[in-house]
Length: 236
Ligand code: BV8
Image 1 (cartoon, rainbow, N blue to C red):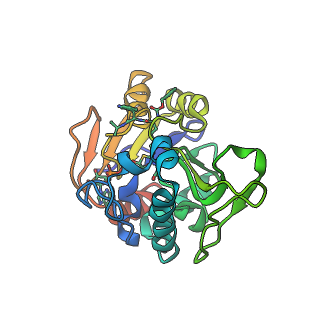
Image 2 (cartoon, protein in one colour):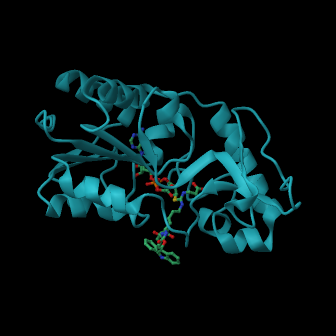
């Protein structure tokens, strides 16, 4: 039932998507019928949408900050944090597409947030005017304190390049076990890492109540908040 744990000198890479946070009450892109806060992400999570109507984009993200502020890490987040605490961040590598920060809140010490974060905002002109941290329950800033231009969240929009791709690629080609958790595998380049890992010889696992049918060695059709605690218990 469970994939083999990585040997002590090898790593396991968990790549998570919105499904990991579903049990925390944060709607996934697919399960909400492709809508987030009433908008289609591809129409709002883009530089073009921001240029055209910054207020609309600000509202879209201010609502997601509000939703995420009410969310607590679930048993899936806590299980990944527990495993990383037990085996260390070199052996347990956490990469997420999620921007909600819940893995960090669960106590994970090292997480690559490849699509950025809701909790850091910057001037729409570019990072030169400084960054602003947004705390849970806070209203994000609307205008840059230096130039008055609209502020944007430091998330990676469609058409923008995700963060730390080279580092993630190296991790995927070196890991012993690759686990895709709660992701539909729709969004690239994130969706390409499981095939990269498999080509490099990793044992690949999909953990998702609805299998995407992708090329995995093992499919665990279960919710992350149930399967991850059981997997970590079995491994530890
Ligand atoms: C790039 C941050 C170039 C923002 C996100 C045409 C024009 C331009 C680009 C493209 C194009 N066609 C294709 C592309 C590429 C595009 C892309 O892939 N588009 C898709 C829609 C076709 N990608 C990009 O634009 C990327 N950039 O390509 O740049 C480049 C690249 C490399 C090198 C040089 C240049 C940037 C993509 C990043 C976009 N930003 N997020 C924000 O959040 O607002 S993506 C966004 O989608 C979120 O990150 C979210 O995570 C993700 C949705 O995917 P999932 O996480 O998988 O979530 P989803 O809802 O889809 O699935 C949830 C799954 O959970 C389901 O399978 C469900 O069954 C499961 N589930 C439900 N409950 C549970 C569960 N699983 C476990 N337990 C449960 N309880």
